[in-house]
Amino acid sequence: MAEIVIKGNKKLSGKITVQGAKNSVLPVLAGTLLCDGECVIHNCPHISDVDISFKILEFLGCDCKRQDKSVIVDASCVNAFSIPDSLMREMRSSVMFLGAIIGRMGKAVISSPGGCELGPRPIDLHLSALQKMGVKITEEHGNLYCDAPNGLCGSEIHLNFPSVGATENIMLAAATAKGTTVIHNAAREPEISDLGDFLNSAGARICGCGSDTIYINGVRKLYSTCHTIIPDRIVAATYLSCAALTGSKITLDNIMPSHMVSILSLFRESGSNIAVSGKSLTITGPKILCRVPTIRSLVYPGFPTDAGPLIIAMLSKADGTCVFVENIFENRFRYVDELNRLGTKIKVEGKIAIIEGVPSLSGASCKCTDLRGGAALVTAALAADGETNITEISHILRGYDDIVSNLQSVGADIKLIKE
Ligand code: EPZ
Image 1 (cartoon, helix red, strand yellow):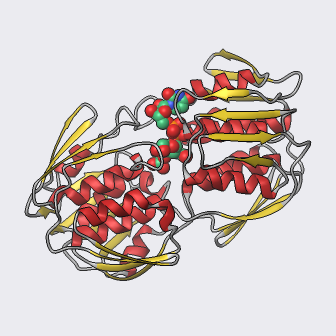
Image 2 (cartoon, protein in one colour; image 1 turned 30 degrees about the vertical axis):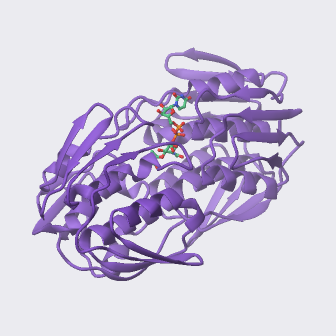
């Protein structure tokens, strides 16, 4: 089984170019299903969630090719409308193909996406919105049978929670629906705006992305286009936490500072110096990390839940006790037990993690429990005395392109040991 081996307590220095955003490229790849022709997507990261998305697109009849960081998807010959259970289980966020498949084929069959390492992942908001748009949905033997006999119709939709995935699914279904769809209490994450930009470049008529009300005027069809994926703000936060925790100075290229306001302010509050210049920034980690009394994860533009594990790892050596309140997912602290094996002192009480700062960390063997929890283990291991072995690293490879070689390039003693 592949593992990552890190010899910690090394200063980092140099430059890392941040990859394209996983949580943007996945809905954009789903959106290529709606385009009658070839779409070229640039700045597409080499991550396993993209590989699974390719398998789904190819199963549906698309032709997918990759040329380094660009992918070409030809959806001229889409001829299927179901996603096999095996693929659904490999990537729970496959549910966001639902709106696009129905938009293209008028029907869809997917297996009910199970929960995941973050707890139950309900899709009630997705389904109730699609039903309002004219989709008949029945659940049998663990499969969802979706059918829009009269096609998709625009509708006024009020989300009781600004769900990122539900907002994306509605946008994908509404892009070629008859009439206008309005999404109230829509998610405002940058990845939503990136999806809207992609769909508009293919001929859709969407406005209001980035605000809490999105208007989609359905058009008859979408066409070939090309699009460049925005930088991954959570991967950027990951490298920032590595620099902050090791007291290092590194530069990140290909970032969008405006997408990272809440993240950057937290790194500054905990003592790092951040100098932003255009689409790059240089972080200088402090000698002593300052405690941050309370951090709360919120929907955008609040502090992102996905950056929580990385910040918690960073604050493990702060000069005091910090409290992290997780407001988005039910069970996002499964990685903490593994982190404590490296000498952190973190207690979890429900949705609250209490991080008592310690003077040093020590290498140990540990295993990933989820994508961002795995990245948190890498962050802590870089600052730990001695050697750390991290297993179950497939979680990390789902969302991080070249994390080992990127960290090697700034001086980390880190190796990927293949099976
Ligand atoms: C997206 O997940 C991201 N995934 C997640 O990133 C991210 O943590 C999350 O948004 C929040 O920002 C992708 O974009 C592929 P939600 P998603 O719908 O769409 C509840 C990572 O680390 N909810 O905004 O699933 C849900 O249970 C991943 O890259 C319902 O109750 O997030 C959760 O508590 C992890 N009913 C909350 O809303 C629904 O129908 C947030 O979910 C949908 C969601």
